[in-house]
Amino acid sequence: MITVVLVTVVIGFRYAVGGDFFGYIDYYTYTTMYDTPSTVYFEPGFLYLIQFLKLFSFPPQAIIAATTCVQCILLVAWLRKRVDLAALVIFYIFSTLLIFEVNSTIRQGVAFFAILVALDAINRRNVFLFGAMIFLAFLFHRSAIVFFPIGLMLWRVSLPPVSLQLGGLMLAYFMTQLFSDQVIFLFSYLAPMLDYTSYGRTSRSDLLLTGGYDSYGIAAFFWMIVDIILILFSRRTAARWADQGYARYHYLFLVAAILTPVNTSWGFIPFARALFYFNGMRAICLAFLTADLLSRRSLRDASFAAALLVMFTAWLVVGIARGAAWASPYQFAF
View 1 (cartoon, rainbow, N blue to C red):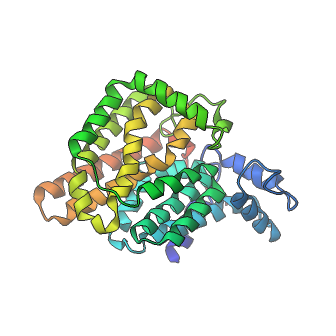
View 2 (cartoon, rainbow, N blue to C red):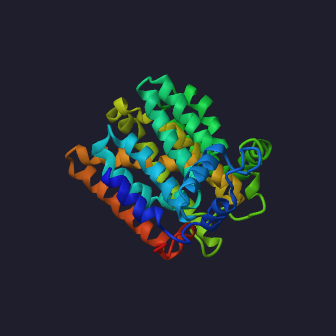
View 3 (spheres, one colour):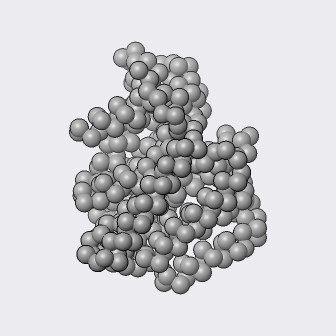
C-alpha cells in the first residue's frame, strides 16, 4: 500500500511530462457527466474513471494520478508472488525507458499491466482472472483485445531452440525491406480495428530518443545486442523460472525483437504504439534473466549481470539527457 501511494505521488502528480499529457488533461476537462461511450473517442473504462473523479470535482491532474494508481496496483498484484524480482522489475521498467512510454500512453499503460496479470492468471490456470484482466485492459485500450486469442495460444508453450530464435532475428534484420512491406500491408489493414489510426498524421516513431533520426541507428543496434543476449540465455532462464511461466513473456518479447527493424525503418507512430505491449516484455524478461544470473553464485554470471545493470543505467542516463519520450525535464504539478 505504501508503494502504491509513493508511486502515485511521484509519477501521478507529474506535470507536462509525456507526449500525450495535455491531451489527457483536455479529455478530462471537456468530458461531461452526460457523455457516453458512443459520444467520446476513448474507451468506456477511461470515460467512467473520468466521470467518477468528476463526481468529487477533482481537478484535471486527478486523471493522471488515478491512472498511475491503477497501473501501480496492477503491477504490485503481478509482483505479489515475485517479491524477489520486484527490485529488478522496477529497475528495468525505468532503465528500458518503459516508464517513459507509460507516462505518454496512460490508457495503454493500464492495459499493459492488466495483461501482465492476465499472463500470470494463465500460469495459475485461472480462467476467470484471465478473462477479467483482458476485459479490464480492453476497457482502457481497444487494442488489448488481441491478447485474448494470444493468451489462449500461450496456454501451453515451450520455447523454440535458440538457433531458431537467432535465425529469425537475423533474418528480420537482413531482410528488413522485404519483411517491412508485408508487415506494413498487414498493419495498415488492422490499424482501424486496433484503434491506431488516430496517430496516422504523425510520422515519427522515435518515442524513446529525440533529437534527430540518427538515434534510430543507435537504438536499433542497442536493442539488437540486448535481444541476442536474451535469446542466448532463453532456455536457461526458462528452465530457472518455469514455475513463473517465463516462456510466455519470452514469446511476446520475441515478437518485439523480430519487428524492431521494421519499427526502426518505418518510423510510424501507430506501429510503434501497437508494439508497446511486446516491447514492454523486454523489461520483464531482463529482470528474470538478471535474477537468474545473480542467483547462480558464479563470478562469471555475476559479472554478466553487473554488466547488464551498468549498461542499462547508462541507457537511462542517455535517455533522460536526450529528453526520452518527452519525459524530461521532470516537474511536478505542485
